[in-house]
Image 1 (tube, chains in turn green, purple):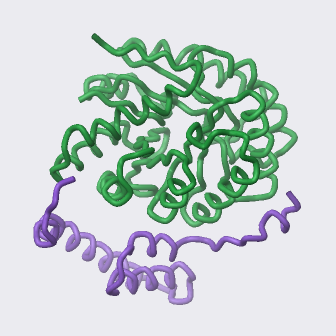
Image 2 (cartoon, rainbow over the protein chains, first blue to last red; image 1 turned 30 degrees about the vertical axis):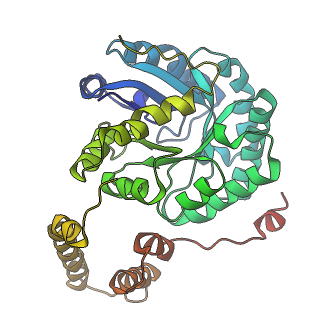
Length: 270
Length: 83
């Protein structure tokens, strides 16, 4: 079965991973801009990173028959310096116009500070002004519940962006209900020790149904598995779920979500 | 959706549950074998709270265990931040 990984950091992965993804049936990847594991020294580092995500990574993925799309933004960890973040945000419009860019992401909160909120408000403003789709990172571990509620508060108070064009990512058992109840897409990230496992993701699909759920590997430079989406598919099969349901979650849902972006131009294989 | 019985799911999950409980017990034993104490560490209280949730009769255990490890949320945060 074909699948789409709607959130994976290809820039941090090897060509072996791309080959494994292609062999497993991956047709499309979505790569949000994120924290590279260290704070960048200046805006030019971001400029080069955005070029990598819009020029080089699409070519690298295409070598394995995978279509590569990207999201542009400044991550919450580097958003704490509000002045620096403003300079990075000023770079975004040039890249948001590029043909493989789906919208603004991953942006959100990390430690839920006032400065992170101030930067996030700037990013939401940019998205609303340009009618961009949004991909939100929600915080890690103890900060997740508080930060997810804060993000939903900000979006509820604004209301200019259609909720069906927003994904709140890294949902877990204590946050997914509020995200779906308010009409957003809910991303579930499969990680070995933090976030969710394939089995728990299958539980959430069973409890909440498959509508507006996206399952992703978010594979990056840390402990993560680029083949986590196929692991989820295997977990669903072990439980006896029909192929049509599995396909809805790992293929139809990401297509529906990505299709709302003007730049998404998926070419289905013959 | 498939419609398995409780026994079907229990049979499927038993060895995983058993293995993870032994892992948990062994990790806490590992801490006990070392010098010093962590009884008063707030993370140890979170672990005990989570174990109580798992052992209790009420549902939504995964969600409630998550909450045991989560910071609280304040409705007034926007006023506190002035945003």
